Length: 248
Image (cartoon, rainbow, N blue to C red; front, side, top):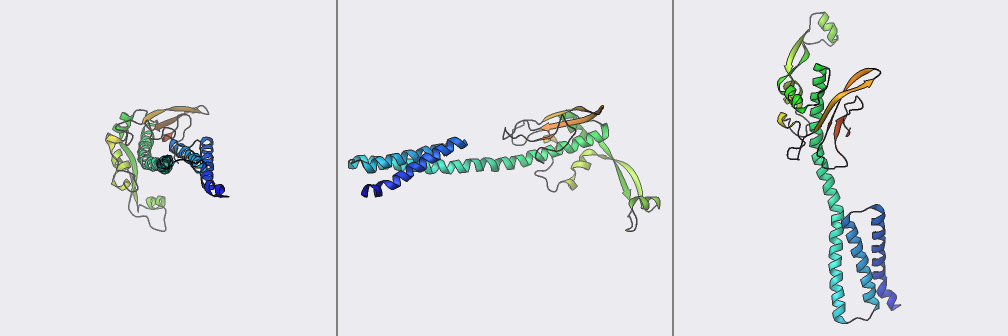
């Protein structure tokens, strides 16, 4: 009865460590988790021995000190096994918000380029030059449309005039009125660079795919240096005429 009272906790500690090790191996847990699990198992096993064998006071003190170290290691390992993945995910979400914003800018510029030249460009230098120096056509209506009329009716009645104007691409697509809700301000010189990578570039491709005998323009922009290599962000496709991003 006395032995049972002495060893029940060490036995429970040992079983908990054994279960943690088996679970960690089966679920491919992090190294910190496995370290903590082995520490728990060893601490439990040593405790069983210490409570069932008649040991000298010096040896018991040594075992207690070793167990204390193992407990500290266990606590730290368990803390790290939770903290590290959370920190990684938080950093990933922060960085990817900026990466996605830049991919959206590239898509916006590519769509404007295609509307003028009927194709996409696979050159980032060409795209940046287009945004900086080119212009696109806008149709503007001058006048106020009455509530009882459509725009076309107001134009036919000479209440509203419609005119075609050329506007700079950068003002039309990335001017102050487009600044709300962005992850970061638009910077033309950085449009082709992956944020937080020290100057690594987005991969940009363009071409055509055949659809029912017709060549359809396609493009794809991809993070060339992803924070999470198993989950790079990209927009567009070289095999399908779509312009959505893989985060959407």
